[in-house]
Image (cartoon, rainbow, N blue to C red; front, top):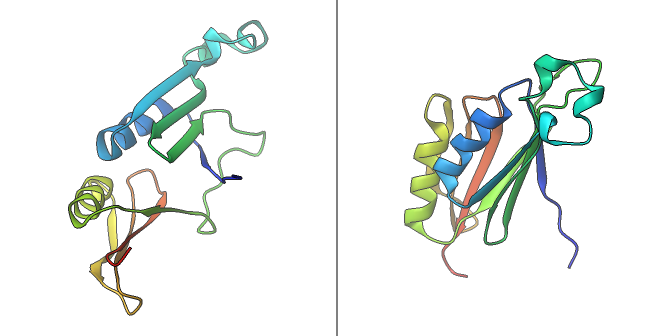
Length: 137
């Protein structure tokens, strides 16, 4: 099966953000610093502790990230959202509360016209999340 996974880019705080997401969502987090990679000798010393690649995995949820920002720098926009289809009322409530801590509860969790519990938020790192729980699945 072909899947699309979310890959987030940060500007030096990837480790902090990915640990936050792990605390919110659970799962196993792996981090590789630039200093631990073959790129170490090609990068400035101040970048050695920056994250080259991070992966958070929980069942079928895969969230990746990096501190590797292009020459233009980090440009945040509203054209990307992270959508999670939750497996229970408890899970959607838990994820919504944890992910919105320090951020914005854009639309509270509510019953949608399509028969699901739905809400969205912007986390403290400026990333937009859509949470959905289909009760009749």
